[in-house]
Length: 159
Image (cartoon, rainbow, N blue to C red; front, side, top):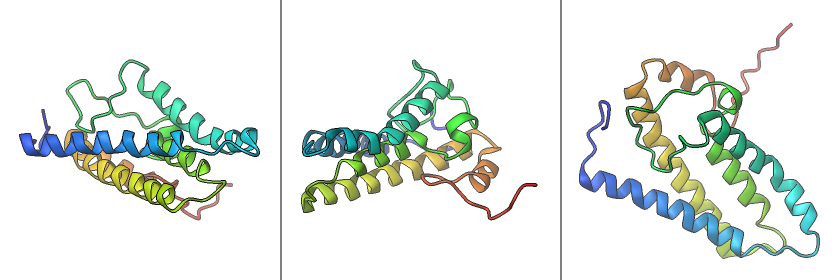
């Protein structure tokens, strides 16, 4: 069900392509990572991304996470926890984690894979934004208040 968005068979196939591409690019980066000379340092640098993604998974519900960006009738709007920092914390966490695995040594194809992953996640996030806005009237306000992949810094100070 599209909740105000018409989801054709072709459209659904494109969305599944994004899901497969997301996993393929992430797997290519992770599986090709060079864990020398300091594997603990790479893991320590990647840990915040892992923690962000896992905390988002817990916030949504361990059994309610979906890889397909189309909301269902069971989809609920979560705006607390990591979702109060960014609207797509699973994507942000994955990007952080995989970015930290790009060195050493830097490889052009791995950097290109990371940018391709970023493009795929941005496309999925854009689709989700439209679908969630159609499903939840309060979502556009949430979008104004909370950053998508990176936190928004309003510059306001709290006393």
